[in-house]
Length: 387
Image (cartoon, rainbow, N blue to C red):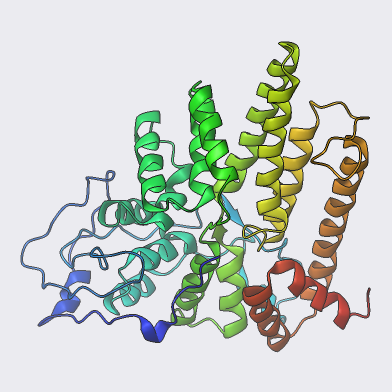
């Protein structure tokens, strides 16, 4: 996974004259990618460099800014099921409102974020992740149409097959070495009945070592947003992770189901070699999520295990294939054991979190960033004297 650049490396946006006026007046909703209306007379912003983005490094100051959202968007990921049963005196209780949800960002926090020059692609995605509304994703699409982070985030949008296909083609062009782009493209081809194109994407993904979902970068930027909003370090780290959007995971599980259906068709047609090749492609995808670059989160590992299980189900359960360490049944037993261990780690974490101090939680998330969620959870188990 690509490491985000430190805050100090970000070039600063300088507001010209009385640039804070960008945040005053009427804020209008975006209607879509081309709905970013212009307001005349607003001061210009100086572009800042953002590695990997190119010239489109900052949203223009005269861009229409969406109104603040009313709560977190659907499809967010909890790093584990954050406890909502803690007493009012525990720091964890401060993460949620009376309904048990993460409270929306106040409008003044959004204004402060933008006024501080936080208007590049990652900054807009952080607002969306923190519950300011999907319009911030659409604003990012309008001004950073070729940023792979934005395109992966937009992969879950339901705005028609043509728009989705166009974004996926841009994602493949923007991140040609990233296997995730090919996997998401393959899923779309399967859904639209384009089997040859889907198989070609699977073959392309199979030959690529890199798999970047940009999730860690998003977590870190959203953590900065919560810090600016006045949250403590532990609260900001927890919220920056718990609100992460992972739209690709459901699509990758769906891709595995598409692969399994095609495997069954090949087997019924008397072509076991084609079914086995698809199994190899599916196992490679699962490997990326369980032990590869996509394994940073526990939920990603669980999806990877599910993917492997799904693509093995059409095969002979008692046969030992050359791409498996033993028979299908034996390997499935190992997958089930790994899934059970991951879920137990989640339960251990939940129990620990209810009594953990803010200092301990800060240490946990520092380990999460560097080593991944599973290793951070192993640290928790060690502190509790568990093997």
